[in-house]
Image (cartoon, rainbow over all chains, first blue to last red; front, side, top):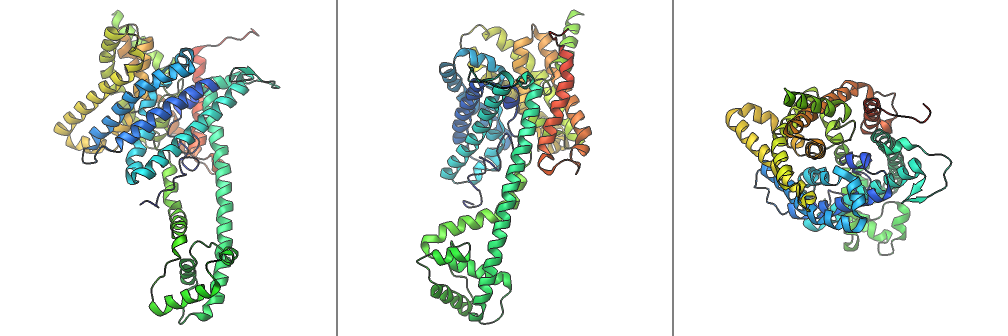
Length: 303
Length: 198
């Protein structure tokens, strides 16, 4: 389970604003200036982090109806110090102008949905990192939205005037926020999909290279192995190496060791493991590639 | 008669002029989820209307009794969440006891329709704009109807929004948000506008 979840998901792949749309109301309606965005980020970070860390400890033997209520109550309790601190840091004027969008953060989907569907499945240490990634992902999206909307709507950043050719005052409105976030989400996804496609093509090339190498090595194998089986055995043997060049650069694993590994597999009929130093990397790489499709489905609009 | 008019005018305001989703973006993520299926549209809207309307008198009571306190602003979410939680649990217990079939169909998504920013946001807006308990009730009721309107408009367009003619990166969530933005722009006309050119 530890390796099933990619801790970087919250930053990009499942970004709460641009990818999954889990928390968009405050960004659309309230992130119109840098100051308000930062206030939102601060309250969201404090409330979500503290509430999830606490809620993760609630035993799952308690029925969900009660558990989800406890999550919200915990968030509302943590909102009290968060709001007081936000008032001291950002000033009462900013907090007042943020209106209802700060207190509604107590019912955000990161606490109510992700705690159940994701954070409960992780070991506590990993979960803390994972939660932080989701929070940073939201904060970055919110801050960037606030900066750009303030700049485009009024020609200012953080209240300071910036020379711009034109302004679009409608971006301060709610419908302007909808359009901005919608277009931003489309562009964000376009960039993400492009990078993913390139990575897949690269992986495919590497796989072909591995296949050829495995075919060359095939003469040392007794019996007939399917191409994919050879690749699997080869990968297990070379551990972290993802392609031929990388393999050759690995000083501790000579070709002779690889061949010995192949022979061991064939004679024992068992899969061997990579050298100890590389096992972590291998496991993580395998877990990431193996769960891509499954975790793509989590990118849906889960409220 | 005046109380009735208060309820109606507050409800109309919260449906058209200050629509919870289209004018304030409250519950936008729930809207995207609810608009996937027709039964979700009505189910979510009914749940939101019920909770906001039933919570409204209690919220009015809190506001009247504690509104003058210096720290009321920071404890409001806790009081409102507790109000919603009590209503949520009591209602589920009643449904579970007397309508087990209904409970079975509701339990999968009822928490999503109750614990979301449209419900708690509606209660905050009641507090900000409601003058008396009838206005609170009107806002509560109007919130659910306003959500129904927005969700149905999105549901009706969902087939076209998933058309292959739309670029792949924009299909689904991004184009739905853009569409809701256009609806929001259309509803913006109800609030009126002025321009220096006229």
